[in-house]
Image 1: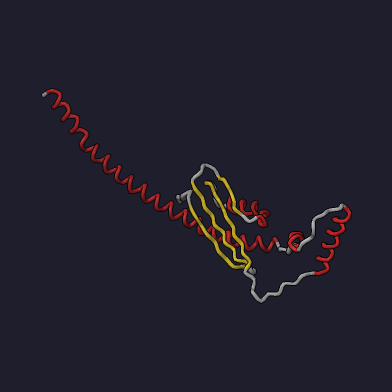
Image 2: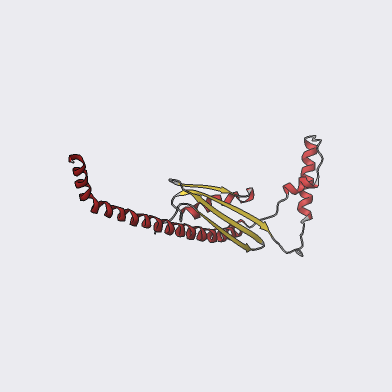
Length: 184
């Protein structure tokens, strides 16, 4: 089957409290060239996405973008482990005193240090599911475009064959017409 090298596919799923959108775009290119637009927090899945796509796309300049938004329920309770926060604050104050640092300690400083735990394997499974959906749409679009290109080429081939037939039937008469013009 003929496939176009250009294409677009989008996958969208809401899984495990996350709204995930994956888009795949490709344009003509001699080799397979992969690029991604991912949030920094998802950098660890770039190679996994590259492998996923490379298994199904042979050529083209391919770009994948991933957007993940948390859509947890509004009534969900946020719990803070005050013991861990206290340990961070005590450790930071100790460093401040030991090195005679002048900066103050703010809540935003603590929030940058204390990160929420993310189950990376579950997040990858969710993103992969949306990426596979996008890939299916992408491949379907490439196949449909390839079929349109095939029909276009075949119709042009039919027209060329028609013109060749006209030339072949008129060719013997053309030689005779040229001879007559030259000698008359």
